[in-house]
Image (cartoon, rainbow, N blue to C red; front, side, top):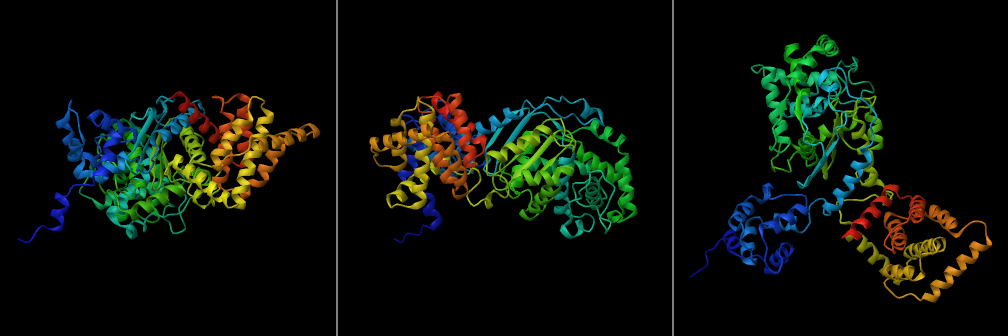
Length: 582
Protein backbone atom coordinates (compact mmCIF):
# COMPACT_ATOMS: atom_id res chain seq x y z
CA UNK A 1 0.00 0.00 0.00
CA UNK A 2 1.35 3.44 -0.95
CA UNK A 3 2.51 5.81 1.80
CA UNK A 4 0.11 8.75 1.60
CA UNK A 5 1.60 10.84 4.40
CA UNK A 6 2.01 14.49 3.41
CA UNK A 7 5.25 16.36 4.06
CA UNK A 8 3.57 18.15 6.96
CA UNK A 9 2.47 14.81 8.46
CA UNK A 10 6.01 13.51 8.20
CA UNK A 11 7.35 16.54 10.06
CA UNK A 12 4.69 16.17 12.75
CA UNK A 13 5.34 12.48 13.32
CA UNK A 14 9.11 12.55 13.05
CA UNK A 15 11.37 12.59 16.09
CA UNK A 16 13.86 15.48 16.47
CA UNK A 17 17.55 14.60 16.35
CA UNK A 18 18.34 12.69 19.52
CA UNK A 19 21.76 14.30 19.78
CA UNK A 20 20.40 17.85 19.60
CA UNK A 21 17.63 17.15 22.09
CA UNK A 22 20.13 15.54 24.44
CA UNK A 23 22.38 18.60 24.20
CA UNK A 24 19.48 20.87 25.13
CA UNK A 25 18.41 18.58 27.93
CA UNK A 26 21.93 18.53 29.37
CA UNK A 27 21.73 22.32 29.80
CA UNK A 28 18.87 21.98 32.31
CA UNK A 29 19.49 18.52 33.78
CA UNK A 30 21.53 17.14 36.66
CA UNK A 31 22.24 13.41 36.63
CA UNK A 32 19.91 13.06 33.62
CA UNK A 33 16.97 14.56 35.50
CA UNK A 34 15.52 18.06 35.09
CA UNK A 35 12.76 19.92 36.92
CA UNK A 36 10.60 22.98 36.42
CA UNK A 37 13.01 24.86 38.69
CA UNK A 38 16.18 23.99 36.74
CA UNK A 39 14.48 24.92 33.46
CA UNK A 40 13.27 28.22 34.92
CA UNK A 41 16.74 29.00 36.23
CA UNK A 42 18.36 28.40 32.85
CA UNK A 43 15.78 30.61 31.11
CA UNK A 44 16.22 33.33 33.75
CA UNK A 45 19.98 33.38 33.13
CA UNK A 46 19.15 34.44 29.57
CA UNK A 47 16.99 37.35 30.77
CA UNK A 48 13.64 35.69 30.08
CA UNK A 49 10.96 33.81 32.01
CA UNK A 50 8.50 31.01 31.34
CA UNK A 51 5.89 33.71 30.71
CA UNK A 52 7.52 34.40 27.34
CA UNK A 53 4.90 34.18 24.59
CA UNK A 54 7.14 31.85 22.59
CA UNK A 55 6.96 29.25 25.36
CA UNK A 56 3.23 29.11 26.04
CA UNK A 57 2.83 25.43 25.09
CA UNK A 58 5.96 24.48 27.01
CA UNK A 59 4.67 26.39 30.03
CA UNK A 60 1.33 24.55 29.94
CA UNK A 61 2.98 21.16 29.64
CA UNK A 62 5.39 21.89 32.46
CA UNK A 63 2.41 22.34 34.79
CA UNK A 64 1.92 18.58 34.60
CA UNK A 65 5.39 18.08 36.11
CA UNK A 66 5.11 20.07 39.33
CA UNK A 67 7.18 18.25 41.94
CA UNK A 68 7.90 15.52 39.39
CA UNK A 69 11.23 14.65 37.74
CA UNK A 70 11.61 15.30 34.02
CA UNK A 71 13.61 12.77 32.01
CA UNK A 72 14.77 13.10 28.41
CA UNK A 73 11.57 11.62 26.98
CA UNK A 74 9.36 13.96 28.99
CA UNK A 75 11.55 16.92 28.08
CA UNK A 76 11.28 16.04 24.38
CA UNK A 77 7.51 16.01 24.58
CA UNK A 78 7.41 19.26 26.57
CA UNK A 79 9.53 21.27 24.11
CA UNK A 80 8.56 19.58 20.83
CA UNK A 81 6.19 22.26 19.47
CA UNK A 82 8.45 25.18 20.41
CA UNK A 83 11.77 23.50 19.77
CA UNK A 84 13.42 26.31 17.79
CA UNK A 85 12.54 28.93 20.41
CA UNK A 86 13.69 26.66 23.24
CA UNK A 87 16.99 25.94 21.49
CA UNK A 88 17.62 29.65 20.88
CA UNK A 89 16.88 30.54 24.49
CA UNK A 90 18.64 27.69 26.29
CA UNK A 91 21.71 27.89 24.02
CA UNK A 92 22.19 31.63 24.69
CA UNK A 93 21.52 32.56 21.08
CA UNK A 94 19.52 35.70 21.87
CA UNK A 95 20.61 39.17 20.80
CA UNK A 96 22.77 39.57 23.91
CA UNK A 97 24.16 36.10 24.68
CA UNK A 98 26.16 36.87 27.83
CA UNK A 99 23.18 38.39 29.55
CA UNK A 100 24.27 38.25 33.17
CA UNK A 101 27.63 39.84 32.43
CA UNK A 102 25.89 42.57 30.42
CA UNK A 103 23.57 43.27 33.36
CA UNK A 104 26.54 43.55 35.71
CA UNK A 105 27.94 46.31 33.51
CA UNK A 106 24.56 48.08 33.46
CA UNK A 107 24.47 47.87 37.26
CA UNK A 108 27.93 49.38 37.47
CA UNK A 109 26.94 52.30 35.21
CA UNK A 110 23.78 52.80 37.28
CA UNK A 111 25.87 53.04 40.46
CA UNK A 112 28.33 55.42 38.84
CA UNK A 113 25.51 57.79 37.90
CA UNK A 114 23.64 57.47 41.20
CA UNK A 115 25.68 60.05 43.19
CA UNK A 116 24.89 62.81 40.68
CA UNK A 117 22.45 65.12 42.45
CA UNK A 118 22.76 68.11 40.16
CA UNK A 119 19.80 69.73 38.42
CA UNK A 120 16.32 70.37 39.78
CA UNK A 121 12.73 69.32 39.23
CA UNK A 122 10.50 71.10 36.74
CA UNK A 123 8.49 73.57 38.79
CA UNK A 124 5.75 74.97 36.57
CA UNK A 125 3.10 72.61 37.99
CA UNK A 126 2.90 71.17 41.52
CA UNK A 127 2.88 67.47 40.54
CA UNK A 128 6.30 67.86 38.88
CA UNK A 129 7.73 70.27 41.42
CA UNK A 130 6.80 68.02 44.37
CA UNK A 131 8.05 64.71 42.87
CA UNK A 132 10.78 62.97 44.85
CA UNK A 133 14.00 64.25 43.20
CA UNK A 134 16.00 61.23 44.42
CA UNK A 135 14.05 58.66 42.43
CA UNK A 136 16.38 56.86 40.05
CA UNK A 137 15.66 53.84 37.89
CA UNK A 138 16.83 52.16 34.70
CA UNK A 139 14.95 49.49 32.76
CA UNK A 140 15.85 47.82 29.50
CA UNK A 141 14.35 45.30 27.13
CA UNK A 142 16.07 43.71 24.14
CA UNK A 143 14.54 42.80 20.81
CA UNK A 144 14.75 39.18 22.03
CA UNK A 145 12.57 40.05 25.03
CA UNK A 146 15.39 39.94 27.60
CA UNK A 147 14.63 42.32 30.47
CA UNK A 148 16.59 43.89 33.29
CA UNK A 149 15.78 46.70 35.68
CA UNK A 150 17.23 48.39 38.71
CA UNK A 151 16.00 51.13 40.99
CA UNK A 152 12.69 52.97 40.77
CA UNK A 153 11.41 51.43 37.55
CA UNK A 154 7.86 50.79 38.76
CA UNK A 155 7.09 54.40 39.73
CA UNK A 156 4.27 55.82 37.60
CA UNK A 157 5.02 59.30 36.28
CA UNK A 158 3.58 61.46 33.52
CA UNK A 159 5.35 60.82 30.24
CA UNK A 160 5.14 64.49 29.18
CA UNK A 161 7.09 65.06 25.95
CA UNK A 162 8.01 61.38 25.65
CA UNK A 163 4.48 61.17 24.22
CA UNK A 164 5.33 63.36 21.21
CA UNK A 165 7.15 60.97 18.84
CA UNK A 166 4.65 58.20 19.51
CA UNK A 167 1.68 60.50 18.96
CA UNK A 168 3.38 61.35 15.67
CA UNK A 169 3.69 57.61 14.89
CA UNK A 170 0.01 57.19 15.76
CA UNK A 171 -0.91 60.01 13.37
CA UNK A 172 1.22 58.53 10.58
CA UNK A 173 -0.53 55.20 11.09
CA UNK A 174 -4.00 56.79 10.99
CA UNK A 175 -3.56 59.59 8.46
CA UNK A 176 -0.64 58.52 6.31
CA UNK A 177 2.69 60.21 5.65
CA UNK A 178 1.62 62.68 2.94
CA UNK A 179 -1.35 64.17 4.78
CA UNK A 180 0.53 64.34 8.10
CA UNK A 181 3.44 66.22 6.57
CA UNK A 182 1.21 68.77 4.97
CA UNK A 183 0.90 70.13 8.50
CA UNK A 184 4.16 69.32 10.29
CA UNK A 185 7.79 69.36 9.11
CA UNK A 186 10.82 67.18 9.72
CA UNK A 187 13.53 69.76 10.34
CA UNK A 188 15.58 70.48 13.49
CA UNK A 189 14.47 73.80 14.92
CA UNK A 190 17.61 74.86 16.81
CA UNK A 191 15.30 76.65 19.24
CA UNK A 192 13.64 75.87 22.59
CA UNK A 193 10.73 73.44 22.43
CA UNK A 194 8.14 76.15 23.20
CA UNK A 195 9.41 78.67 20.66
CA UNK A 196 6.77 80.45 18.54
CA UNK A 197 8.74 80.38 15.29
CA UNK A 198 7.51 78.38 12.29
CA UNK A 199 9.16 77.25 9.07
CA UNK A 200 8.96 79.57 6.03
CA UNK A 201 6.03 77.49 4.72
CA UNK A 202 4.27 78.17 8.06
CA UNK A 203 4.44 74.58 9.29
CA UNK A 204 5.96 73.65 12.68
CA UNK A 205 9.56 72.44 12.41
CA UNK A 206 8.98 68.90 13.70
CA UNK A 207 6.68 66.80 15.91
CA UNK A 208 8.91 67.20 19.00
CA UNK A 209 8.54 70.96 19.46
CA UNK A 210 5.30 72.09 21.07
CA UNK A 211 3.99 73.62 17.85
CA UNK A 212 4.54 70.32 16.03
CA UNK A 213 3.06 68.24 18.83
CA UNK A 214 -0.01 70.48 18.90
CA UNK A 215 -0.42 70.08 15.14
CA UNK A 216 -0.11 66.30 15.49
CA UNK A 217 -2.85 66.42 18.14
CA UNK A 218 -4.95 68.45 15.69
CA UNK A 219 -4.45 65.79 13.01
CA UNK A 220 -5.56 63.01 15.39
CA UNK A 221 -8.51 65.01 16.73
CA UNK A 222 -9.72 66.08 13.29
CA UNK A 223 -9.64 62.50 12.04
CA UNK A 224 -12.24 61.40 14.60
CA UNK A 225 -14.70 64.30 15.01
CA UNK A 226 -17.20 62.02 16.70
CA UNK A 227 -14.83 61.33 19.62
CA UNK A 228 -14.02 63.62 22.53
CA UNK A 229 -10.45 64.51 23.47
CA UNK A 230 -10.68 62.11 26.40
CA UNK A 231 -11.88 59.26 24.19
CA UNK A 232 -9.03 59.90 21.77
CA UNK A 233 -6.61 59.94 24.69
CA UNK A 234 -7.86 56.49 25.64
CA UNK A 235 -7.18 55.31 22.09
CA UNK A 236 -3.61 56.55 22.39
CA UNK A 237 -3.30 54.96 25.83
CA UNK A 238 -4.38 51.66 24.23
CA UNK A 239 -1.68 52.23 21.62
CA UNK A 240 0.91 52.71 24.39
CA UNK A 241 -0.46 49.58 26.09
CA UNK A 242 0.29 47.57 22.93
CA UNK A 243 3.73 49.16 22.54
CA UNK A 244 4.66 48.32 26.13
CA UNK A 245 3.74 44.65 26.08
CA UNK A 246 0.14 44.60 27.34
CA UNK A 247 1.18 43.56 30.82
CA UNK A 248 0.91 46.77 32.87
CA UNK A 249 -1.90 49.32 33.02
CA UNK A 250 -1.42 52.69 31.33
CA UNK A 251 -2.74 55.38 33.65
CA UNK A 252 -4.01 58.91 33.19
CA UNK A 253 -3.51 61.76 35.68
CA UNK A 254 -6.41 64.18 35.76
CA UNK A 255 -4.46 66.27 38.29
CA UNK A 256 -1.57 66.67 35.88
CA UNK A 257 -3.93 67.46 33.01
CA UNK A 258 -5.72 70.20 34.94
CA UNK A 259 -2.44 71.71 36.16
CA UNK A 260 -1.07 71.67 32.61
CA UNK A 261 -4.21 73.36 31.30
CA UNK A 262 -4.09 76.11 33.93
CA UNK A 263 -0.55 77.09 32.84
CA UNK A 264 -0.92 76.49 29.08
CA UNK A 265 -0.77 80.17 28.07
CA UNK A 266 2.18 79.68 25.71
CA UNK A 267 0.57 76.62 24.16
CA UNK A 268 -2.61 78.61 23.51
CA UNK A 269 -0.48 81.30 21.87
CA UNK A 270 1.16 78.66 19.65
CA UNK A 271 -2.24 77.15 18.81
CA UNK A 272 -3.65 80.50 17.68
CA UNK A 273 -0.48 81.14 15.69
CA UNK A 274 -0.93 77.80 13.90
CA UNK A 275 -4.57 78.54 13.24
CA UNK A 276 -3.76 81.97 11.84
CA UNK A 277 -0.92 80.77 9.60
CA UNK A 278 -1.06 77.26 8.11
CA UNK A 279 -4.51 76.64 9.51
CA UNK A 280 -5.61 73.60 11.49
CA UNK A 281 -6.45 70.34 9.68
CA UNK A 282 -10.14 70.00 8.83
CA UNK A 283 -10.82 73.16 10.89
CA UNK A 284 -10.61 71.12 14.07
CA UNK A 285 -11.68 72.82 17.30
CA UNK A 286 -8.65 74.53 18.83
CA UNK A 287 -9.64 73.70 22.40
CA UNK A 288 -10.07 70.01 21.56
CA UNK A 289 -6.60 70.02 20.01
CA UNK A 290 -5.02 71.54 23.13
CA UNK A 291 -6.89 69.22 25.46
CA UNK A 292 -5.74 66.16 23.52
CA UNK A 293 -2.13 67.39 23.45
CA UNK A 294 -2.05 68.04 27.20
CA UNK A 295 -3.86 64.77 27.90
CA UNK A 296 -1.16 62.83 26.04
CA UNK A 297 1.44 64.55 28.23
CA UNK A 298 -0.57 63.49 31.29
CA UNK A 299 -0.48 59.77 30.49
CA UNK A 300 1.34 57.94 33.27
CA UNK A 301 3.68 55.00 32.75
CA UNK A 302 6.73 53.43 34.37
CA UNK A 303 10.30 53.08 33.15
CA UNK A 304 9.71 49.36 32.88
CA UNK A 305 6.83 49.97 30.47
CA UNK A 306 8.69 52.62 28.48
CA UNK A 307 11.65 50.29 28.00
CA UNK A 308 9.40 47.75 26.28
CA UNK A 309 7.89 50.48 24.09
CA UNK A 310 11.42 51.52 23.14
CA UNK A 311 12.28 47.89 22.40
CA UNK A 312 9.24 47.69 20.11
CA UNK A 313 10.72 50.57 18.12
CA UNK A 314 14.14 48.90 18.19
CA UNK A 315 12.47 45.78 16.79
CA UNK A 316 10.89 47.52 13.80
CA UNK A 317 7.45 47.86 15.38
CA UNK A 318 7.07 44.29 16.65
CA UNK A 319 6.66 44.12 20.43
CA UNK A 320 9.26 41.62 21.73
CA UNK A 321 7.03 40.74 24.68
CA UNK A 322 3.86 39.84 22.74
CA UNK A 323 5.19 39.21 19.22
CA UNK A 324 2.52 41.54 17.82
CA UNK A 325 3.25 44.08 15.08
CA UNK A 326 2.16 47.40 16.57
CA UNK A 327 3.66 49.67 13.91
CA UNK A 328 5.05 49.16 10.44
CA UNK A 329 8.81 49.32 9.97
CA UNK A 330 8.40 52.36 7.70
CA UNK A 331 6.60 54.33 10.41
CA UNK A 332 9.18 53.25 12.98
CA UNK A 333 12.03 54.53 10.77
CA UNK A 334 10.41 57.95 10.49
CA UNK A 335 9.66 58.04 14.22
CA UNK A 336 13.25 57.18 15.15
CA UNK A 337 14.56 59.81 12.75
CA UNK A 338 12.43 62.46 14.49
CA UNK A 339 13.66 61.27 17.89
CA UNK A 340 17.24 61.40 16.68
CA UNK A 341 17.33 64.99 15.49
CA UNK A 342 14.83 66.58 17.87
CA UNK A 343 14.15 64.29 20.82
CA UNK A 344 16.29 65.94 23.49
CA UNK A 345 14.89 69.48 23.29
CA UNK A 346 17.38 72.11 22.11
CA UNK A 347 20.28 69.91 23.20
CA UNK A 348 19.34 67.28 20.60
CA UNK A 349 22.28 68.08 18.33
CA UNK A 350 24.85 67.67 21.08
CA UNK A 351 23.16 64.49 22.29
CA UNK A 352 23.24 63.04 18.77
CA UNK A 353 26.87 64.09 18.40
CA UNK A 354 28.00 62.50 21.68
CA UNK A 355 25.57 59.62 22.25
CA UNK A 356 24.33 58.85 18.74
CA UNK A 357 21.03 57.20 19.69
CA UNK A 358 17.38 58.10 19.01
CA UNK A 359 15.93 59.27 22.32
CA UNK A 360 13.13 61.33 23.80
CA UNK A 361 12.99 63.02 27.16
CA UNK A 362 10.19 64.45 29.27
CA UNK A 363 10.20 67.08 32.00
CA UNK A 364 8.90 64.60 34.58
CA UNK A 365 12.35 62.99 34.40
CA UNK A 366 12.03 60.21 31.82
CA UNK A 367 14.42 59.42 29.00
CA UNK A 368 13.37 56.75 26.49
CA UNK A 369 16.13 55.62 24.12
CA UNK A 370 16.48 53.10 21.31
CA UNK A 371 19.45 51.00 20.17
CA UNK A 372 18.12 49.81 16.79
CA UNK A 373 18.03 46.03 16.35
CA UNK A 374 19.37 45.54 19.89
CA UNK A 375 17.25 47.02 22.68
CA UNK A 376 15.25 49.88 24.12
CA UNK A 377 15.80 51.38 27.53
CA UNK A 378 14.25 54.00 29.76
CA UNK A 379 15.54 55.94 32.74
CA UNK A 380 13.69 57.95 35.37
CA UNK A 381 15.16 60.71 37.53
CA UNK A 382 13.27 64.01 38.03
CA UNK A 383 16.26 66.35 38.35
CA UNK A 384 16.63 68.21 35.05
CA UNK A 385 19.45 70.12 33.38
CA UNK A 386 19.04 73.58 31.83
CA UNK A 387 17.62 72.04 28.65
CA UNK A 388 14.88 70.13 30.50
CA UNK A 389 16.54 66.70 30.20
CA UNK A 390 17.07 64.33 33.13
CA UNK A 391 20.63 64.82 34.41
CA UNK A 392 21.07 61.22 35.43
CA UNK A 393 19.31 59.92 32.32
CA UNK A 394 21.67 61.79 30.00
CA UNK A 395 24.72 60.76 32.06
CA UNK A 396 23.63 57.11 31.84
CA UNK A 397 23.34 57.36 28.05
CA UNK A 398 26.86 58.80 27.79
CA UNK A 399 28.39 56.06 29.92
CA UNK A 400 26.48 53.37 28.05
CA UNK A 401 27.91 54.32 24.66
CA UNK A 402 31.37 54.68 26.22
CA UNK A 403 31.25 50.98 27.18
CA UNK A 404 29.33 49.48 24.26
CA UNK A 405 29.35 49.82 20.48
CA UNK A 406 25.93 51.47 20.53
CA UNK A 407 26.69 54.87 18.97
CA UNK A 408 25.17 54.86 15.48
CA UNK A 409 28.59 55.51 13.94
CA UNK A 410 30.59 52.94 15.91
CA UNK A 411 30.11 50.69 12.89
CA UNK A 412 32.28 53.11 10.90
CA UNK A 413 35.22 52.76 13.28
CA UNK A 414 37.18 50.36 11.08
CA UNK A 415 37.61 48.07 14.07
CA UNK A 416 38.96 50.88 16.26
CA UNK A 417 36.28 51.71 18.78
CA UNK A 418 38.58 52.02 21.77
CA UNK A 419 37.80 48.38 22.62
CA UNK A 420 34.19 49.00 23.46
CA UNK A 421 32.21 45.81 23.97
CA UNK A 422 29.76 44.54 21.41
CA UNK A 423 27.28 42.71 23.65
CA UNK A 424 25.72 41.04 20.61
CA UNK A 425 28.69 38.71 20.45
CA UNK A 426 30.01 36.47 23.18
CA UNK A 427 33.14 38.18 24.49
CA UNK A 428 34.60 34.82 25.51
CA UNK A 429 34.08 33.34 22.04
CA UNK A 430 35.46 36.46 20.41
CA UNK A 431 38.63 36.39 22.52
CA UNK A 432 39.19 32.69 21.86
CA UNK A 433 38.78 33.25 18.14
CA UNK A 434 41.17 36.21 18.16
CA UNK A 435 43.81 34.25 20.10
CA UNK A 436 43.45 31.31 17.74
CA UNK A 437 43.97 33.60 14.73
CA UNK A 438 47.07 35.17 16.33
CA UNK A 439 48.61 31.73 16.98
CA UNK A 440 47.95 30.60 13.44
CA UNK A 441 49.35 33.81 11.90
CA UNK A 442 52.42 33.80 14.14
CA UNK A 443 53.29 30.29 13.04
CA UNK A 444 53.70 31.64 9.51
CA UNK A 445 55.56 34.81 10.56
CA UNK A 446 52.72 37.25 9.90
CA UNK A 447 53.98 40.82 10.37
CA UNK A 448 50.93 42.14 12.21
CA UNK A 449 50.70 39.12 14.53
CA UNK A 450 54.41 39.47 15.30
CA UNK A 451 53.89 43.14 16.17
CA UNK A 452 51.12 42.20 18.61
CA UNK A 453 53.31 39.53 20.19
CA UNK A 454 56.33 41.86 20.55
CA UNK A 455 54.28 44.70 22.03
CA UNK A 456 52.56 42.34 24.47
CA UNK A 457 55.84 40.77 25.62
CA UNK A 458 57.62 44.14 26.01
CA UNK A 459 54.76 45.65 27.98
CA UNK A 460 54.51 42.64 30.30
CA UNK A 461 58.26 42.64 30.95
CA UNK A 462 58.22 46.37 31.74
CA UNK A 463 55.43 45.85 34.25
CA UNK A 464 57.51 43.06 35.75
CA UNK A 465 60.48 45.45 36.12
CA UNK A 466 58.28 48.15 37.64
CA UNK A 467 56.55 45.71 39.98
CA UNK A 468 59.13 43.37 41.53
CA UNK A 469 56.35 41.07 42.80
CA UNK A 470 55.71 39.81 39.26
CA UNK A 471 57.79 36.83 38.20
CA UNK A 472 59.04 35.95 34.71
CA UNK A 473 57.31 32.57 34.91
CA UNK A 474 53.96 34.38 34.95
CA UNK A 475 54.85 36.23 31.75
CA UNK A 476 56.13 32.99 30.22
CA UNK A 477 52.82 31.24 30.94
CA UNK A 478 50.73 34.09 29.51
CA UNK A 479 52.85 34.31 26.36
CA UNK A 480 52.59 30.56 25.83
CA UNK A 481 48.81 30.79 26.11
CA UNK A 482 48.82 33.42 23.38
CA UNK A 483 51.38 31.81 21.09
CA UNK A 484 50.30 28.24 21.77
CA UNK A 485 53.88 26.94 21.86
CA UNK A 486 56.60 26.67 24.51
CA UNK A 487 58.97 29.61 25.04
CA UNK A 488 62.49 29.29 26.45
CA UNK A 489 62.71 30.93 29.86
CA UNK A 490 66.31 31.89 29.18
CA UNK A 491 65.27 33.90 26.14
CA UNK A 492 62.69 35.76 28.19
CA UNK A 493 65.20 36.32 31.03
CA UNK A 494 67.80 37.76 28.66
CA UNK A 495 65.25 40.14 27.18
CA UNK A 496 64.16 41.29 30.67
CA UNK A 497 67.78 41.84 31.79
CA UNK A 498 68.44 43.93 28.69
CA UNK A 499 65.39 46.08 29.46
CA UNK A 500 66.48 46.42 33.08
CA UNK A 501 70.03 47.46 32.09
CA UNK A 502 68.54 50.08 29.83
CA UNK A 503 66.47 51.37 32.73
CA UNK A 504 69.58 51.81 34.85
CA UNK A 505 71.47 53.60 32.07
CA UNK A 506 68.73 56.02 31.07
CA UNK A 507 66.64 58.55 32.96
CA UNK A 508 63.46 57.39 31.19
CA UNK A 509 62.09 54.08 32.45
CA UNK A 510 61.39 51.22 30.03
CA UNK A 511 57.75 51.48 31.05
CA UNK A 512 57.53 55.10 29.88
CA UNK A 513 59.24 54.14 26.63
CA UNK A 514 56.72 51.35 26.15
CA UNK A 515 53.82 53.72 26.80
CA UNK A 516 55.19 56.06 24.15
CA UNK A 517 55.65 53.15 21.77
CA UNK A 518 52.11 51.87 22.37
CA UNK A 519 50.73 55.35 21.82
CA UNK A 520 52.56 55.70 18.51
CA UNK A 521 51.45 52.24 17.36
CA UNK A 522 47.79 52.45 18.42
CA UNK A 523 46.59 53.88 15.12
CA UNK A 524 47.97 50.77 13.39
CA UNK A 525 46.24 48.44 15.87
CA UNK A 526 42.63 47.34 15.52
CA UNK A 527 40.44 46.48 18.51
CA UNK A 528 41.48 42.82 18.38
CA UNK A 529 45.17 43.68 18.62
CA UNK A 530 44.66 46.20 21.41
CA UNK A 531 42.53 43.76 23.36
CA UNK A 532 45.10 40.98 23.09
CA UNK A 533 47.89 43.28 24.32
CA UNK A 534 45.77 44.58 27.17
CA UNK A 535 44.44 41.11 28.03
CA UNK A 536 48.03 39.80 28.24
CA UNK A 537 49.12 42.62 30.53
CA UNK A 538 45.99 42.28 32.61
CA UNK A 539 46.57 38.58 33.19
CA UNK A 540 50.07 39.34 34.44
CA UNK A 541 48.84 42.12 36.74
CA UNK A 542 46.26 39.91 38.44
CA UNK A 543 48.28 36.68 38.45
CA UNK A 544 48.64 36.87 42.25
CA UNK A 545 44.86 36.99 42.71
CA UNK A 546 44.43 40.75 43.07
CA UNK A 547 45.11 44.04 41.30
CA UNK A 548 46.96 46.40 43.60
CA UNK A 549 46.79 50.19 43.38
CA UNK A 550 50.11 50.54 41.57
CA UNK A 551 49.16 47.83 39.08
CA UNK A 552 45.77 49.47 38.54
CA UNK A 553 47.46 52.80 37.76
CA UNK A 554 49.78 51.09 35.27
CA UNK A 555 46.83 49.37 33.61
CA UNK A 556 45.07 52.73 33.26
CA UNK A 557 48.16 54.26 31.65
CA UNK A 558 48.48 51.31 29.27
CA UNK A 559 44.81 51.53 28.31
CA UNK A 560 45.21 55.25 27.66
CA UNK A 561 48.28 54.65 25.50
CA UNK A 562 46.40 52.00 23.51
CA UNK A 563 43.35 54.24 23.09
CA UNK A 564 41.13 51.98 25.21
CA UNK A 565 38.37 53.59 27.28
CA UNK A 566 39.29 53.76 30.95
CA UNK A 567 35.92 52.24 31.84
CA UNK A 568 36.99 49.01 30.11
CA UNK A 569 39.74 48.57 32.73
CA UNK A 570 37.17 48.74 35.51
CA UNK A 571 34.92 46.30 33.69
CA UNK A 572 37.77 43.81 33.32
CA UNK A 573 38.67 44.15 37.00
CA UNK A 574 35.04 43.65 38.05
CA UNK A 575 34.80 40.59 35.82
CA UNK A 576 38.00 39.24 37.39
CA UNK A 577 36.67 39.85 40.91
CA UNK A 578 33.42 38.03 40.11
CA UNK A 579 35.43 35.11 38.75
CA UNK A 580 37.57 35.04 41.89
CA UNK A 581 34.46 35.13 44.07
CA UNK A 582 33.05 32.10 42.24
